[in-house]
Image (cartoon, rainbow, N blue to C red):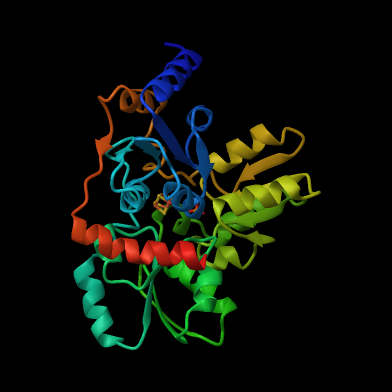
Length: 304
Ligand code: 13P
Ligand code: SF4
C-alpha cells in the first residue's frame, strides 16, 4: 500500500471506531499527519485528560501511554509499538527511590514524567521539560530531590539558586551523547545559525545555546524567530518537521546521531494495525499504582 492509502485507511478506521491518535513530536511526518493531536510531553498529558473517544492510540513511548491510562482509566489505551520504551524511564525503580528518600526525608521528590507509573507512586509531583521550572519554583520547600534526569535537574537548579537540589545519575541516552565537541563542529559548519537545545543535553552543551526548551518550545522559537538558520539540539525528527514547515529557513542537526530508537520504533503500519485492533499493546495498570501515579500527574497539570 502507498503511504497515502495507509493514511486514508487509518482516517476511515478512526472515524468508524471512535479512535483518537495522540503523537509525540518525535514521530515521523506521516504519523503526525494522521494524528488528532501532536505535542510535547506536557501538552500530551493535558490532552490525555480531555480526550472523549473510546480508544486512544499513543504514538510515542510507554510512559506516555501509561499517562493516558492513568488519566483516562475507562478508555482503551494502546501503545502503538510494544517495544517503544524510554530507556531513561527504566533507569530508576521504586525501591531505589524509596531508599534515597529515607536519606533525604525533608526533600520534595520531583519526578520527570519520563518515569514508570510504579516509581511515580513514591514521588510528590511530576514535571516535564516545559513545566519543570514553573513547578519547581512554586514548590513550597527549598529542598528538592529531582529524578531521574540529572541534566534537566541541573538546568532547573541553575535557574533557582535559592533552592537546594539533589540529583541522581539518570539521563536520556540520546541527548546525553552530545558533547561540547559536537557543538563546536556544528557551529563551525554553520556559523550564522542559532543553536536551540533540549535541556536533556549535558550542561557543556546547554550552556552554549541561544535557546533552551522542550520539543514544542524549540519548534515555536524557530518558527517565530527572524533568523534563517538553526542548529537543533534534540531528536532529529524536529529538524525534519521544522524543515517541512519552514521551507525558507535552514535547519541542521547538532549531530546525525541524535536519534531515539524507541521513538522511531513506531511505523505507519503499526498505527494501522492498532486501528484494526491487531497491533500495539493495550495498557493495563494496577488500580493502586494508577491512583498513586495520578496524584503526581494531576499536581503537574494543576501547577504547570
Ligand atoms: P518533551 O517533548 O517534553 O520536550 O520531551 C522530550 C522527550 O525526550 C520525550 O521523551
Ligand atoms: Fe526517552 Fe530520551 Fe527517547 Fe525521550 S528521547 S523517549 S527521554 S530515550
